[in-house]
Amino acid sequence: TGRLLFHNARAERILGHELAETPELEAYRQYPAAHPDGTPYRPEDFPIIRALLFGECVDGQHMRYERGNGEATWLEVSAAPIRDASGEIAFAVCAFTDVGAARAAAEALASAEARSRALFQSAPVAAYLADAVTRRILDCNATATAMLGHSPEALRGMFLTDLDAGPRHGAPRPRGPG
Image 1 (cartoon, rainbow, N blue to C red):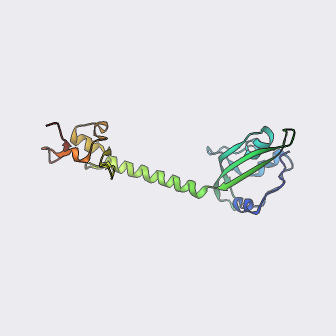
Image 2 (cartoon, one colour):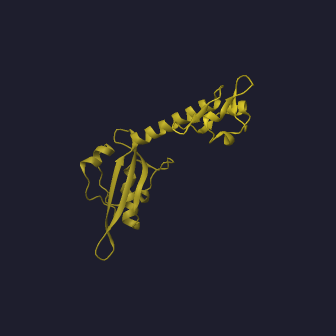
Image 3 (tube, rainbow, N blue to C red):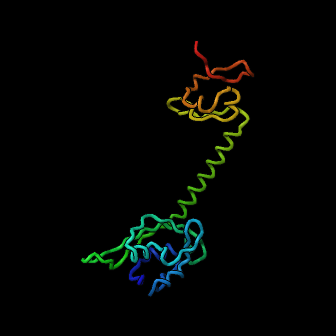
């Protein structure tokens, strides 16, 4: 039926409201959940219902959820069926945790990395990213490749010591043989 039998106080704290009665499947419509693309959950989309009705084990599904105070967060939800001695699904269990802060931090980090990458690539001076231990070039910007006349692929893997000041405006260039 999808009826909620037991829950703990932590579930209510995470969701920001008491858990409502769910005497039938349609009662799950009252929970304000959405898929990562923003599509609202249908009752049969909830991991606990998938476990209960279809025997599906759901591991770490991300769900956008609007708490009781209207604040949106992200939940990571897992669910699994519990079978009786004859192998029939008798119950389902569900566990979830709030991953909203971790997800926001990951998105902020990705945004900062994208901004840093754009600054690195558009710098008007030759810039190199090198391994601190081996001193091998891991990446370089467009200015470096233009100054040296080599592709980024040709420069990657070279040692910083392989670069030599060239005659063109004191620009570094790869050392040649000899």
